[in-house]
Image 1 (tube, helix red, strand yellow):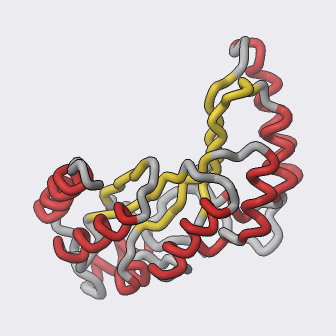
Image 2 (cartoon, rainbow, N blue to C red):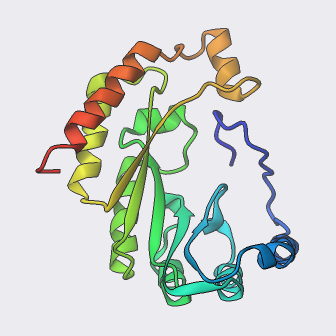
Length: 214
């Protein structure tokens, strides 16, 4: 599935060419490796939805790259991809951090964003990740969503804080041209995002997440 706000190059395919992609990445790394001597202390597997890829491919990438013994290895994941069996395999392969694409803890707004999971599934996914032995979790949240209120945003922030993640990433929605969401806004099907309200949401997040109890 492709999110309606996404302007990245994305291909929706029932059978993606994972093997060819992995081979190309490793070839690109081989060409660049002489410029990067030593071992990396951080590896981030993200950008698209790597949690959809076969875990064996993730293991191939991790095993082929020169990582320090204490390297932080992050995998981006959607909540609906987080099964206990898959996460246990990721953990055994060396993934020790998950960036979880929660985006919102409001089911209506998740529908606006075209997400495939519910708020309850996002919370369950967080717990599944930690129960699989990966306790370093980052939660991704979005604000400035059409029809999102400050109260909606507060509830999502407070719900995310209750999970006690190590890190929270906040992204202000950008209405990109020639996307389904942009066309929906232009037609009046959904509301135009309010930049002043989005600024208030940023300040609320800064205040709420900066409190000692969170």
